[in-house]
Image 1: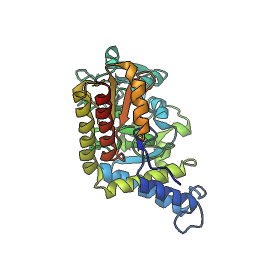
Image 2: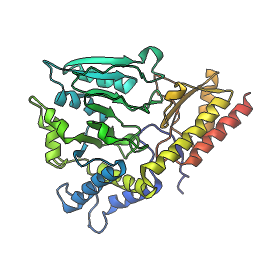
Image 3: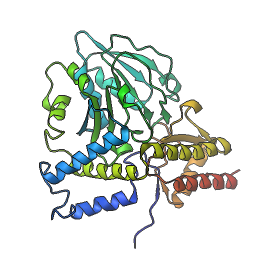
Image 4: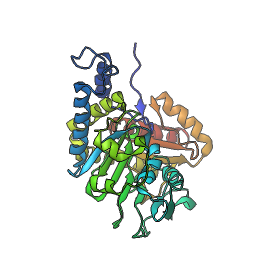
Length: 360
């Protein structure tokens, strides 16, 4: 007898819709009428060519990607992009790149970029435990590019505005991609590891302006050259076939729900419900400054830390998983990704209220 589905607030791999999981499982058994599992088909076959084409078209439609951009499916996660970006676009000898230090993953991106050239950290919120995203900063006009992270999963902050700058804008959107409308035309490159809000682990989405690729210079290994992936339709080597397939199914589900515009409204309602309870409940407090609070990853703690273990055990009994905070932060983190139902947030809020009544 199968267990009832739990309320999954995990930060990644992300929750996926039940029907997507069923479709993916069916594809593992047999891909439509191919007589083969999706795990067995060749990445050069017509079946997979159709899958990756469908996935690319869905990305283009859902995010309204302009025609002069390429949509790539790569491997290595967002972490590979931390080094791949400066390797392609940062000339060690005579240019620098501008970076915003607003969280753990931005910090990791800076560390990797420093291996390839001069890095200018234009602003940082590290002195405040990354509980906000800096707003007042200047990006040098001669920077090769400006890099930022739109949503910080660990600290629970999110960028709701991006700077107007004359240099190429690059953004890590791993944890809020497809959760809200964005103007892709403002960016030269967007990247996102799928496992936060797009699909299963194993594939990384890159959306890059074709003219920006003209800035690539120097000798770059083939596996790390964006131009090679663009020219080979992301098929330079064997891609993560199943991860792309499941991502395609998830994007199809998102389209059926009404697309990004609809899901943004739903995500806002989920976040509002939980933040309202955190602010009202006498046992809890939020970690991020209010105007910087993420709609995807809600971080909070208890005024009495000794109760945190008891609360975690209490919600676990109610079928809630994935809310334990990141190891360096502690407390709690509830990730409200696209596929998380509003009802799951209501269950968490009800648990917070009941626990407060028992321990007040």
